[in-house]
Amino acid sequence: MALPIRDINPTRSFPFVTKALVFVNIAVFIYQILDPAITAKYAFVPEKASSELYRWVTHMFLHSGIMHITGNMIYLWVFGDNVEDYYGHLRFLFLYLFWGVAAAFAHWASTIAQASMIENPYLKSYLLKMPAVGASGAISGVLGAYLVLYPRARILTLTFFIVITLIEVPAWAYIGFWFLYQLIYGFIDFFALQKVEVAYFAHIGGFVAGALTALATRGRRRRVVYYYYWP
Image (cartoon, rainbow, N blue to C red; front, side):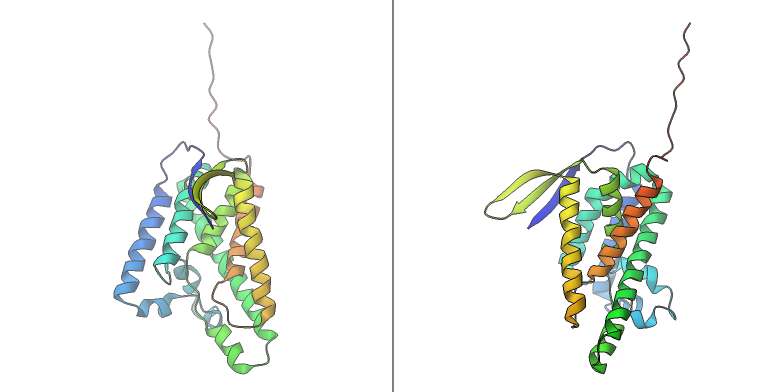
């Protein structure tokens, strides 16, 4: 197991949006504890994707438990500030939401495809009605963009293999391995044609959307040009 602690990649601006997103997610999670009914009301449900459009956005602010939100917020905290610094605050917020919607679409498409392969009507109905929650799809978009924009950045990582230790890992290796993991287990779950607990294709869809966004916009960041006048 490897957990990112921080990246060695300084920013030029304060990450207002990243910190605000962390705060909002934690606040909503506390509200979920106080009122569990909001989870079913605002989660993303494939069967209701076309009739209750608000779920495409609201699901990414809900979480299923303390470990779920803790892991997601750590990843957002570590990688979000640099991506926000690159795009600017408002553009980053828009892209974050866009990547979350793209992740939901990938989850919806994979669920529809999987359901079409299942003959058991009860399992088919379960898949289409199963609620999905979490910011991980949008955060996967952040990881995809980060990989394209800062592949050589160093990630200070806490490892739990034989001993607990801190090591520095290049972003291309850390995020690349993370994405490979999502691909492998995503397709294993897809072809197993059974109940799933992790929306791997949401992670895959968000990551691909983030990477493609960064590839399309790389090098277009606004630059400040300084003019020097010689006496």
